[in-house]
Length: 472
Image 1 (spheres, rainbow, N blue to C red):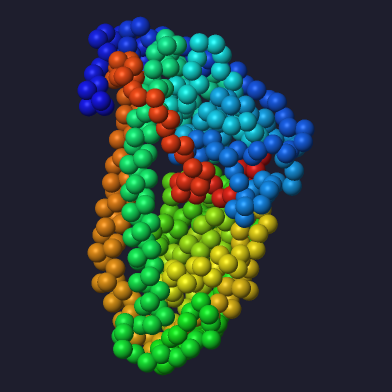
Image 2: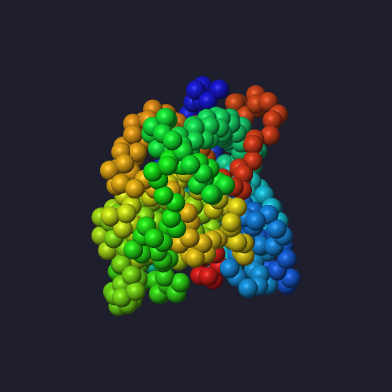
């Protein structure tokens, strides 16, 4: 059905210049005539807290521990902005990267956000897709106020001046119906691949756990480790607290300095990607004075091992490479192995093992979000071969054994990326009138698209938990 889609029969040049050609029967209306800002505030703070993601739009924010209450650093949610279903919610500080969406839920959102309600003859979910399309994200970025990308803000007047494509109401509904069906079909394909990825990761974790607790020789004589979740270990291995294997065990700064437009990067768990610490286009910065002050306490070095100790990605591990000077936020622990005792690849591999990860989550303390104390990290029992040579050999052997699994994982991830890219292009072509879906929408079966889960892994790609509330 998607392959049969064709352009409209007639086009015309759109007003405003940047939109190019649009179907001849579509109109152009500035956003200030499409939406009006709502500033209705909560008097109880007890409504469902909502969050905004550039990937999944508006979702419900739940506590990671499953208990009642909001997942937020704010002391009170009184004064947060009320949101009704079909309202448009925009994170004005991240609108330039698509952090906005129409809400399916009633609830409340950060006072730092803007909430808008649509007028008559407008289908909210058509605009949900239109405003998040690449052309409109670029227009929103150009219309936002600020000096550098990470500090751009989309105020209501800025939004109001943006030109909006407006198909007839019945056609907006047809577009939404078609995109719900197409997105649902693609989401089911993505979820099927995610299930395969989950199985491959289980296999990978089992291989890693066996290697870091038994070594590579299946015939080696074993002894009890004395740690239930470790089980038996080779007779010539030792079990010692992690703090005895490292010359540095600490976390990042608890009092992050004020952000600046430029300067030195202040990185977080968001920068831990694929087992490495990486820079991102939207990194926060601090001044040289504040950077130098933090450096008097600690400096992160290449070959340090990082582990997330706060938040939904608790247990994530990365090894530091030479990416230039930076500082770290408190959600990350910094572990510096003593080279005569512990090879840093072996420590990083052990921290990623299934047994250790399960131990971490069973030991979590909950407040607004899950976390473990630095003292707990320091006392983690670590099984280690007595020689660095054996540690390195285990890591090298693992690399060979895991190569087919890693290849399969990379292929699945790439296929998911391609499906997402295809979905983005399809949505953009439909909402901007490059493809006519009216006939196709009329032939669609009645089926509900799958919901985007609130625990979608892409939610972790937003700001650190609570940052938006702090910014308010």
